[in-house]
Length: 138
Image 1: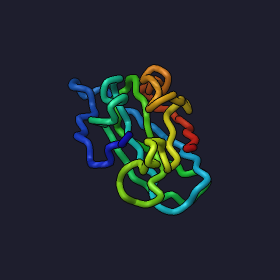
Image 2: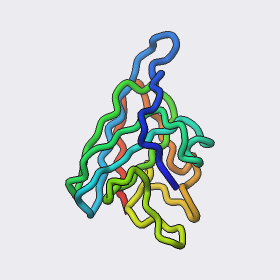
Image 3: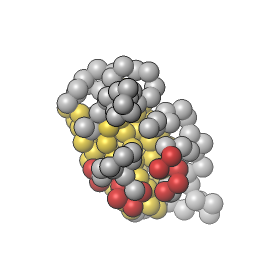
Image 4: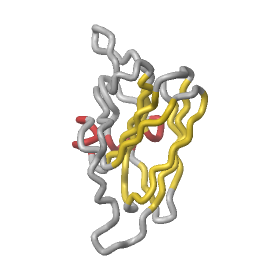
């Protein structure tokens, strides 16, 4: 599984110029060093395939809790995936058997069995006034 960390195209305000909301994430990890990569998805197909995020961020990973705000999202339904890129190679490093070697997590702390969880398990509503999500990277 790879989370895209390249810059995403950000057509984030609705077509009629309606309000935009802020998503504030608290990311918890036991490890320190490297970075935490975050990707926000607006639909199940992109979330499941880890492609076409509507917003991405890469922030330092000092250990413990890290806060990041993603501003100006259109109110709607989203899911977030994040991972601790301890080796700073830009992707989730895997063991030879295909299991993640680096800590990762999803909004609502959803867990998948063989890959990411279903979009609906991780999805949350972002109201016009914004919201907060806490994600524990394991």
